[in-house]
Each structure stands twice: as structure tokens, then as C-alpha cells.
Image (cartoon, rainbow, N blue to C red; front, side):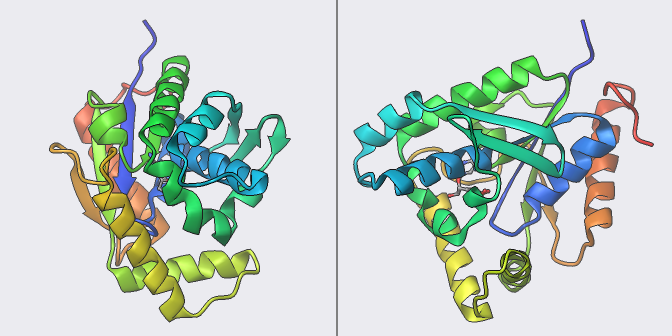
Length: 234
Ligand code: DC
């Protein structure tokens, strides 16, 4: 049987999940699964179709009949929605601020959780990130992380990320937005954001990207006893 390991990274908006997951996956030679991209892709489809975002049944039906493909390498993920490349469009702020409608819909989550497990079954080792990866989707994961950082730091990161894409917003506006997004993620009934019991909690407020990836890779190495991954860290 090929060596196989599942690492989950859950956390708040701007905690560094995606960067950490991409870096860790690259370091370990594992696949990277960005589950937020799936919720974003469905949100984009619903927005473009002018769908009623309060209609749970219609959203779930849409999720079941939508094809979402993720490929590319860690850090250079490509996302296709019904065959169309939406890698850039799903990062627009209108998608970020409306994704909670899809994320709170249990029928949508059921469809996406199934897709996520299927992708993981096909991958060798995998680093998967989101809100519910350690708690719901992969309860038996080998290593679980929960990332967080001070809201001020997360707002600054998010503001820079938006700026990079040509979207300019005040710091105060971005801070209010991420606090609200976290509140929605952690208080919804369906699979809310919370640390898994056995998750290693990491505060990334004062960490550079390299420090973050180093810290996570070290913990994985300790847990795995080395050698479990298909490819060793360089
Ligand atoms: O991590 P992100 O900002 O790309 O996530 C987009 C949205 O999807 C956000 O509303 C949280 C939600 N999400 C979720 O509910 N469960 C996941 N596993 C991943 C993301």
C-alpha cells in the first residue's frame, strides 16, 4: 500500500491557512486541497445566475449539478467551474462577502464534503484546508492544525491581499469584514468553525511564511516519525 497521510489545517480568515497549506504541501510532496475554493466557486455561480441565496433547496440542487475541478500545483491552484476557469473570479471580494450563504447550507456542505473525501481518496498524501476539515471531513486525519492570529494582523494581511488584486479598501472596513465573516463561520449550525479536540493550535501573528511552514512541517515530522510522506522535505 502506498504511504499516505492526511493533514488538516482549519482556521480563521487571514490566519495564513492557504499559504501554510500550500507551503506545507510543497515541502512534503503532498497534494493541496483548498476547500474554500469550492464554496467560492459555487458562490460565484449563484451570484452570476442571480440565484436566491436564501433558498437552501435550490442551492443544494445547484451544488449537486455543478462540476468543480481543482488542479495545478500547491500555491498555483487552478479552479474550473463547469469547465470554465474561475481561478481569479472566485477571489473577488463580492464572493468573499457572500460565501456564507452557501457555507451555511447543509445540503451544499453534504455535496462538497463528499467531493473532498473523494479527492483525498484519489490523492496520495494530502494537506487540506478549510473550516471543518479536522472536525467533520477528516476526523481520522494524521495531524490536525488550527491556525489563528490577532484580528489586526489578519486584517492587514487581507488588505494587502486585496490590494494585490487591485481592490482598495480601508483597514477599518477590512477588519469589520473579517470579524463578521469569522462570526458567521463559527456560529452557523452546519459544521461551524472550531478547533478539533486534537488540533495543534498555532498563533501565526508574529510568524513569517517560512516560519509558519517550518513550524507545521516540524510538527508533522514529529507526529509522522519521518518517512511517511511520498517525498521527504528537502
Ligand atoms: O477560506 P475561504 O475564505 O476561501 O472560504 C470561503 C468560504 O467558504 C467562507 O465563507 C468559509 C467557507 N468554508 C467553509 O465553510 N468550509 C470549508 N471547509 C472551507 C470554507
